[in-house]
Every structure is written in C-alpha cells, then in structure tokens.
Image (cartoon, rainbow, N blue to C red; front, side):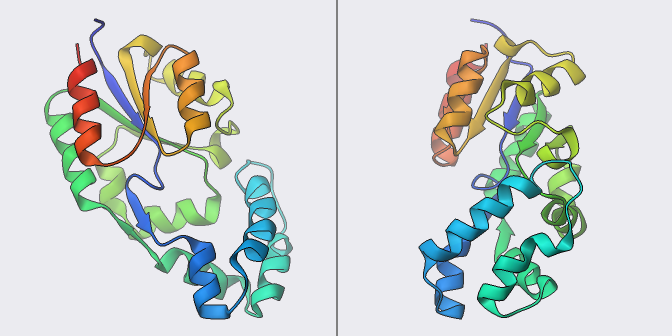
Length: 196
C-alpha cells in the first residue's frame, strides 16, 4: 500500500457544525424550507465562483425573508460553530507528519467570516482552497488537480473526506483514497486502514 502524505477535507459538514439553514429559516421566518432552498441554491452556485457578483444577487432571499443582506449573512453564519473534536484530531494528524488541507466550495463572504471568527481552523491546516478563490468547483476534477499540483502531491498518496458522494466519487476516479464523511470514529478507522 502507498504511503499517505496528505489528508484533504471538505469544510462544512466536517469541521463546521450547523443546523441546516433552510430549517433555521423555516423556524425563524415561517418560510417553507423547500421554497427557501430553491432560491438559495441558485444563488449559491453563482457565489461559489470567482466572478464578481453584485450585492443585489441576494435580493430574492432578502426579499423573501424581509431583511437586508447583512442581517441575512449574520443569521446564516451565526448558526455555525467549529467541531473541536475534529479539529483536535487534525492536530494529532499533523503531529504524526501528515499535511492537512481544506478543499471547499464556498463563497467569499462566508470564507471571510470563518477567517475572522475561526482563526484556529486555519492555524491548523497547511492550506485552504476555496472555490471562489481558485475558480474550481467540486466535483470538477480540476479542483483536486489544483491542490495536488500546488503542493507537489500524488493522488495515490492522499486521503480525502467529503459529505458529498459526488465529490468523493470524483476523488476516487482521480486515484485518491476517499470516503464520505460520517463521524470522527469512521474517519480515524479509514485513515488507519489507508495510512501506509
């Protein structure tokens, strides 16, 4: 079995905990979660890319909720917190000599919030790759190629975790040892099984 040099993680759903935004919106604003998510998903696809977008892009959401953009972003991001058990495990992995990276489809506003409010997240990783900065949105194989090229890594020497099956399948097709993230216990087990 090939020696593992790096472990790459998606961010949200692994290191960031939150109640689904659509559920929180339904509870606070009494807006049907499916109706909200239909509008939200359309905008999210655009904001995850590096192209500049108008602040008005969020208007369908802010109109629906009858709040301004800052209120919406505050509501969204304030419902998120770090999973400290996962973060402590990353520290262990780094102490054992692994390079650790984040590979995330995310938008600038959310990334800026994380960098300001969760600095411990970034202090414990060797690099963080966000789609709005790189231009590569998973499951595009170029998102994986980019992180490997920039860090002189071979796919077979990497492990990847994501909460999206489509992203995991792309990583596997690229030769990366990958698994859908479930919890800390199964993550540790998968790394133990594939570390050499």
